[in-house]
Image (tube, rainbow, N blue to C red; front, side, top):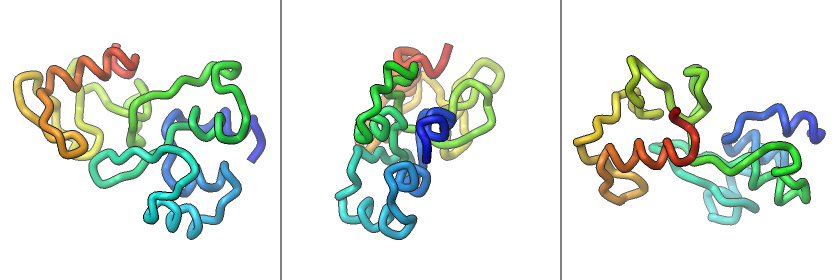
Length: 131
């Protein structure tokens, strides 16, 4: 992949795409992830694993800030138009894996830890994922 190809990628990448950007075969990328040896940080969102484009760029010696790239939270792909992380439905944040609305007063498990929906939404606001 060229720098232009990498720059055109979404903020969060699947293991296969991140591996391709790093010059790894699909199988080798998944093997490294399963063994906890992937060259950059892998984030788990629900049942999916994602890698930050900014982390891949840094690993390749490319300054992400010079290309306007920052490290966002982990994500899944969607067509919400706001970010590859979450969708907004009727002004409410929708969970990227289950598709259910995140209720501010309900509890959720995030990476095995209990979090209040309001805290999740606040973090997404802080990261600029939700306006």
